[in-house]
Length: 151
Length: 151
DNA sequence: CCGCTTTGGTTGTACAGTACAACGGTAATT
DNA sequence: AATTACCGTTGTACTGTACAACCAAAGCGG
Image (cartoon, rainbow over all chains, first blue to last red; front, side, top):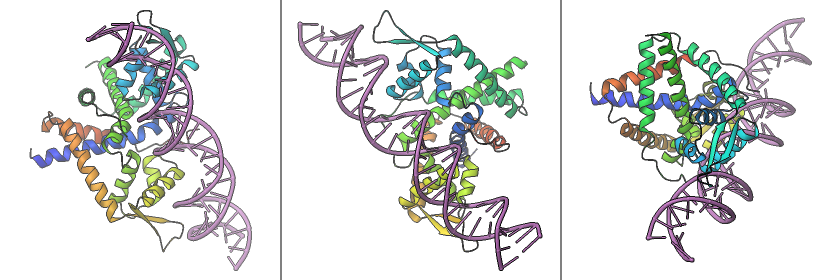
């Protein structure tokens, strides 16, 4: 393969990922008006990594800690997560889903998964596996070397 | 491969694409503070499809026409696009990039591409090609069957 | 030709998500 | 003990977005 073909692939990846990002919010909003994309993502992380801290969320999603603070406050107000004081370090809040949070996430994930299943129904299992692996690899590369503040 | 493995792949795809969407804006903002993701996307479309109309943009990106109206107004104020009246249909605005818009997009695309090149430098050409093909295939499936308004 | 419907776009308004800055409280280090 | 580093909250401002109401221009049926 030539270098030009390599450039073409990278360009396509760039374009398609951008297009996806552009549409993701609208699609998520249509799929789950009751739980916005961001809240959904954070809740999923909290359920997955129970006992995580707000700082972890900020680092993982490239969000400012103030944003996380407000988002988590919102989830708490909705009764979906609990913020517990950490007895070992009084600065830290340990985050846990409530039962309602677990339930809501489960149903949300189920319908999201169903939507993806439908969209991907024509794909072979091998293609799905490889596509998943590529995405994981791509995203894993992105957590290192974070640049500084935007402005 | 079992059905369970298939589900796992779909679940990973869902998770990773969501994570990507979550980070895209922040990454774009860091890469190009002067041209936000949305403006960039719309400008790229206008350059690509010269003479397109605001309605086309709204349909393609699942945006409300008011959003497009304001975004395009912003691009015009920045001197990056022109809105020309259509002599055949006086309701329509025909959109064209200015020279400055062309130039800015070119340099923006160049540095975006460079960022992706760096991120993907360890990938083989074959992997890049396949990843690109998967993304194109995935996105192509998504343009059909748009649901109604959010609220 | 004249009202009715459709279509393209703008403006008013409201809200979510986000960032940065400044701060208060706690822990770690020196 | 003093200083530094870290975690989180609050104040403030801005962008992107949606929906609704509106205007103006086309298109259409009588």
